[in-house]
Length: 218
Image (cartoon, rainbow, N blue to C red):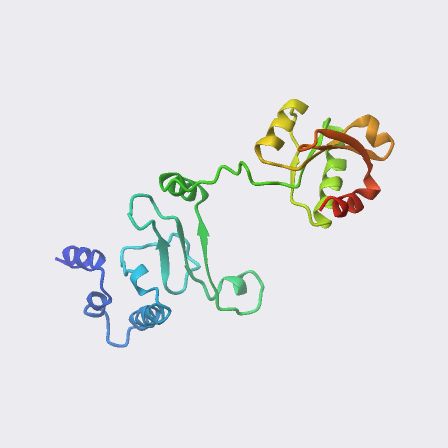
């Protein structure tokens, strides 16, 4: 029956099977053949397989569509996308051939967990952890972090209601060198408190001089 023929085609993993039921001049077969030839030329042919049952639910696709899976095939698609030559033009842009894809962050996390390669981000070795003592100082903390980053530091900016004890533990756990505290009294004087976590010493640094300080301790 027609349904049996269709099922047979959709469950086949070779382009030849599609070629047998489509016209000789089929553009789809030509594009697929060219794609697989290019994949082989790039040396990734072993990572690509044909699957006629792949269906993407968006109507703007104009050519080949694809999905990416983990090699064991245990999880659902990690990413999916395809060719869409008319999409940018549809939204008022110039006619631009394009291809793209989207990732599923939840699947990526599960895959990393399964492979035991999900980073903990502990011990990442920040130069400074910046922390504001109150929510009304978040803007100042952002400014401080930006100055330090501009001076070449790696910075972890904490914009949460946390106690200083938690912040110092967090900084130590992540092997940060300094903890920069934005507090009301110091800010009124145009300063922040900087604690050297290795020496245990704490001092006040002018906000306007933070980039100079960051250069000095580099």
